[in-house]
Image 1 (cartoon, rainbow over the protein chains, first blue to last red):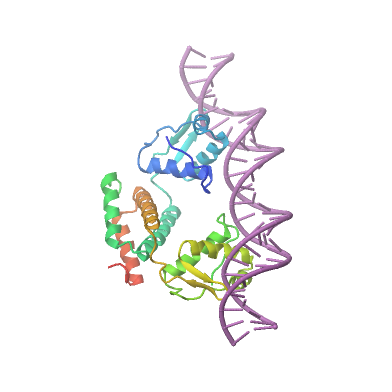
Image 2 (image 1 turned 90 degrees about the horizontal axis):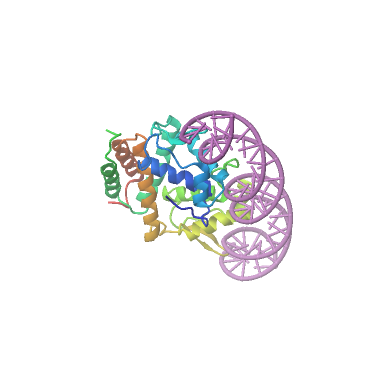
Length: 128
Length: 128
DNA sequence: TAAGTGTACTATGAGTATTAATACAGTTAG
DNA sequence: CTAACTGTATTAATACTCATAGTACACTTA
């Protein structure tokens, strides 16, 4: 499914969080779809189940998944609904990154193109 | 000038790197302007000079500043010229963040507005 | 030459990440 | 009812990273 970069400075559990978020956002993992179990994924990636659990706990705290004891962990169908603080945080990070991009010579036209490209490829279904 | 969040999980030297980049990108610090010395800033922020040096070394490796023994550290006038790898990296990060923003309901119009707003406030001098 | 500047090194302690081991609670199919 | 799955939690050990303290060297400049 994916791989962990053991040489990265980014902790393993954070790499997992990022990857699962990406799969959920890109709708590779669909609402209510089950995630691999903690033990199964641990074996596949050859890392400790507690580390997987650490990532899943973080994903749950960010509202991306929900977990049911005895059943498993699933994509939260309302994962695209985040609270105001999270939206603010994303916007702030975007402002910062766009400022840096413009400073480094990436043009606003290039930025517009990127937005259009992403909209096209995701169908823009949610934002209208 | 700025403050360090000791409670943050982000290392102190990384916070410094981020802050100086922001000041350079927003042209608060201008080309060839001198940065506070390692020892002076250490005293002001009450942290170790080696930690400041760690941040300055990172800024230098990212081409944002240059240093001269015996003289000091200065804003690199060509800091807005980054190599292709860096530009690619920024674009990739942008694609990811824009995808997440759209997924979370931030509209493309809002994104366009943000770009315009930033352009207006920075004079858009470099990108045209 | 003194007082500034950057740069580098070693050693130490604290915090974080990961692992290993174990155990408990819930679900489900047979 | 039970075995085999699921998630969740705890403790302890280890390794890594970060920050600090101390020290020293090289350069610049008034």
